[in-house]
Length: 128
Image (tube, rainbow, N blue to C red; front, top):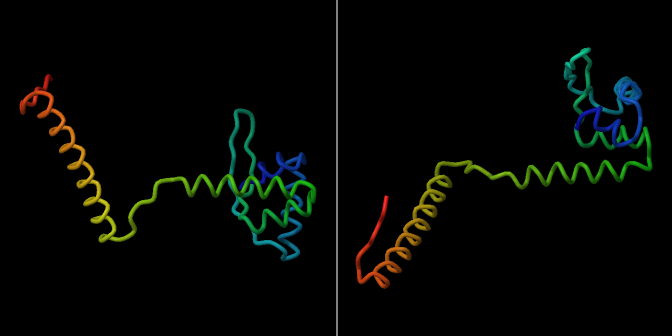
C-alpha cells in the first residue's frame, strides 16, 4: 500500500503521513519503506510503499478511528491477489492441469459429435 493511499484513507495530508512514517522509522517502530518516485505533469514527488504490518501501525498513529478502513483495504487487496489465476508451481502439476484440460476438451467434442450424429443421421455438417 502506498503512503498516498494511506493519506486518502485517513483524510490527512500526504506530507504529514510521510513525516509520521519517517518518525516511526527513526524510532525503530517500523521498517524503512521502499521509496517510489512519482512524476506528474508539473513536478516530481515521492511516496512510500508500506507493508501490511507497518501500515496498521502508521494508521493507528495517524488516526485510530480509520484503522477499520485500513483493514478493509487490505482485505480488498488480498482478495484481488487470491482471485488471480494460479500457475502450476511444479512440472507434475502442470502436466496434471494439461491432462485435465485435454480430457475436458475431449468430453466436450464427444458431446458435440454425438449430438450431431443423432440429429443428422451420423453426418457432421461443418460450414466454414
